[in-house]
Amino acid sequence: QVQLVESGGGLVQPGGSLRLSCVASGITFSIYAVYWYRQAPGKERELVAGVNRAGGSTNYADSVKGRFTISRDNGKKTVYLQMNSLQPEDTAVYYCNTRIPATNSNYWGQGTQVTVSS
Image (cartoon, rainbow, N blue to C red; front, side, top):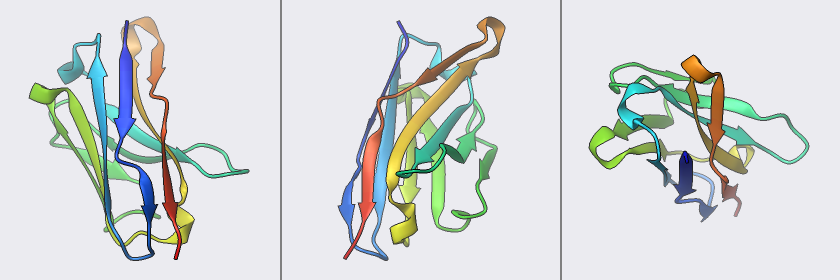
């Protein structure tokens, strides 16, 4: 059974930093790309960042470029999202996601809340 478990969310002041983690189990983690999405109240879920299976290629939403960094440690089956210079508009539930194209399967974690407020 594939499981993705996020952690690291919390309350932070504007300009602060947080590091989110996503630990995978039940999957050959190292052969799949992994993504971070977020969903703010009343808004659709949006793609924040993605990393390829080796960790050498990343992509980001324009809104977080230069502030967020996605990385992965395949030995620990973990993907990270380092978030710096956080702003109130970054407030959302952040979700980890991976997909298995061969089976058309799409897996999500339970989400971790990030709140940016003074």
